[in-house]
Image (cartoon, rainbow, N blue to C red):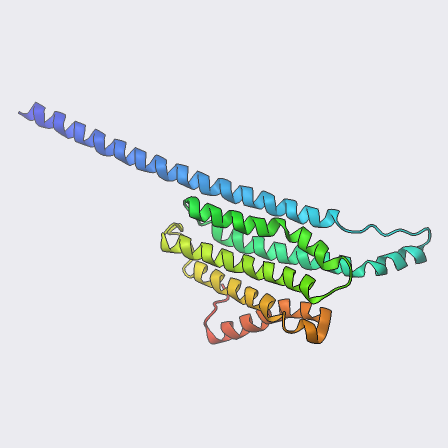
Length: 228
């Protein structure tokens, strides 16, 4: 009788151990898949930033005066490059801040991430549209709306992951919430710049930075957005 109980207990322990190993393996595979998506996203962002630099016009001139004149002629292209560099870097920073805590992904989240990457990839093209020819509202709006859409898309992605409880338990409390707020603030900056363009022209670029700075400061002061 004792031998039978021992055998039964051993079989049960083996079954539990096997189930535990299977669960651990599945979790490890899911985490590896999420990590691969993060690495892939990082690579796409790096390529997009590189393409920005490739599109920069090269100044020419036989003398220092001619070279300087050529540089000033292309000053708006260089400014647009710096703006797009900061914009892409800001998008990546938010993605990096959140995705390092993601434990698993599914097809809908992957599709959302690919949509986010699509908007990253077309940034060099939109920058070119912004700088080619005479500046007008449509050129400005295409760029601004694309950035606002990208920020909102990532906010949706964060909410989907949060509801499915796919963030690592060690994730700092409130990080997902704060990231979503920052994304919505940034999106509002791009959208609010649209009615300013007919009034102040290219100075509407300042709204892209001004609105997040002001709204962020107000929300931090009121305690709605933590500084962490």
